[in-house]
Length: 151
Image 1 (cartoon, one colour):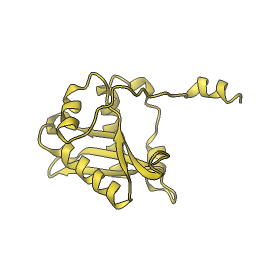
Image 2 (tube, rainbow, N blue to C red; image 1 turned 90 degrees about the vertical axis):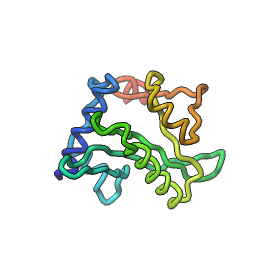
Image 3 (cartoon, rainbow, N blue to C red; image 1 turned 30 degrees about the vertical axis):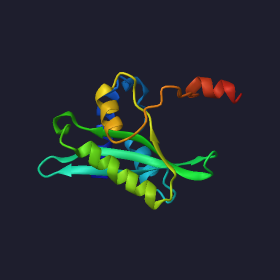
Image 4 (cartoon, rainbow, N blue to C red; image 1 turned 180 degrees about the horizontal axis):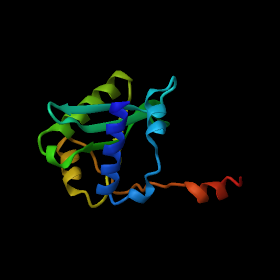
């Protein structure tokens, strides 16, 4: 449970960094169930630095592309604590997740990035990733989701 506690703390750091703390409602127990149940919703890799413990994480899960009729992999989060950025940890974690995508036979490895996060966008472009300007994320959650599905 120690790793789950640390990952949860890093998720909270990411929420603060993205100015989205108000959206973080997930619990440590929920995270543990999502990652370690008999039917996990997602996978997680972590980066550890001796003397500092876990300093980064990546959470990802499989998707499906109808256009390619193939599996894909969605990177939900990649976060490296500020004092360990620019050391290649983020890039290495992306390489590891790309390796998982290949092992799973995925045709795509995708993620989103905030429009103001230029550093991340530059990293992704340097790896050969396309930052797609013409797609927008749509989301129904909370009360809006309840109203739409007419509970």
